[in-house]
Image 1 (cartoon, rainbow, N blue to C red):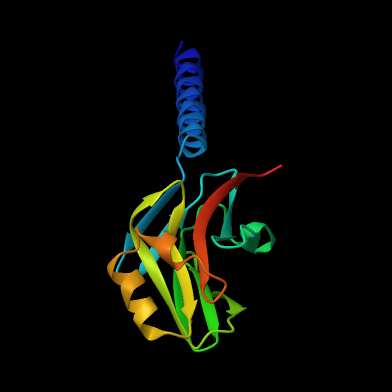
Image 2: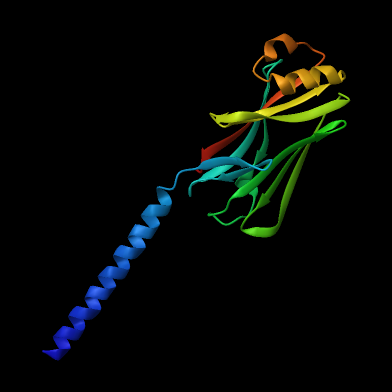
Length: 173
């Protein structure tokens, strides 16, 4: 009788462990991808079966370009990427670091033909659109766009660079 009771208790614990593992795996699969903005950085957490793509849409020429794809990075599945957009004379920068690996740092440089360059974040992230890289030779235009980023139509000329930055998630194949 004692032997049967021991087997029953062992089976009970095995079933509990299996249920716990199933719940944990299921919980991670259901985890939603998130993007948040804090202190000049975007915190990007893909769901378990997704990679992050940073995408640019040229608002003047309507050309689209993928700037960063995390598929090739050897990072743990559950990691948050800290993404920073910045600009300096003659280039725009996208910097990625990972919360899971303090040695990981990826910098993408996008050349600019303009003298004054800036990244202007949107006040609200919508459909993954985070903000604009703006390049111009006229500092007053840059100031106007910073003050009124929702009124870009008046600046659609060949003399300005307007690259809308998006952080998107792609399902792994």
